[in-house]
Length: 294
Image: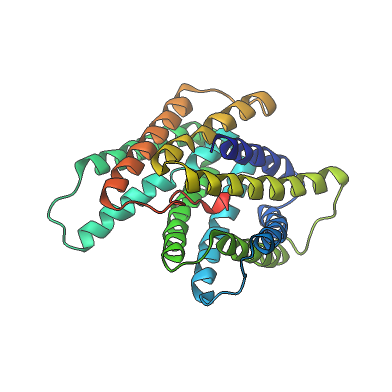
């Protein structure tokens, strides 16, 4: 799990560097291309057929996952790396909010105040993180990162549903990668007028994004398959720490007390929300499946 978080943080570095040459949708396209090839090879090696009887569910999972991924990659290119990573990791807090909303709709007379406190704590952290960006006119970039986390939570629900009907993780990731490749190409064609030309450095960055993301996903799946889900869910937040270090060392990202406190609050809220959610409905082994990590 620790290796997976390190690889995802390293992928974020490559995405940030590649954003100087390519649009976010273009990076998503190449990431999907590399991921689909690697997933096809892994599926063949594992003897898992890629044929599915649930194309509709995969379609909706791909739509939400690709949308989240595009927003996240866009935020990485425009915001400090640790800030973008933290806003995407708000998915656990969004999941808690969805759980509370579902309870209200179902007519629950009593809500878990601890879960409500975790949600509020997470949004206090968001406010502290986004406040420094207002001076830099980066509010919209911050909102894109925040929205990526919310849609990631929706994608988690769809992945959970696919897991419950027996779809293997490799097949789920394969169709998500294919969806990302197709959607990224279409969005790039519409918004950018076509693909950008390549340099050796740019091509290496794109290849690295795909390989790092896919390898990290294999590590993540292995961790949830053999370890304790709640321990893994908490260790996953090490990705923010790695990204924070990368941002300071490579990109000279500023270290402000507001952003630091905000990230700590979101990490605490995410861990708390995960622990409390597990008492309501024990998650599957890939419970923290994040579209950016698939």
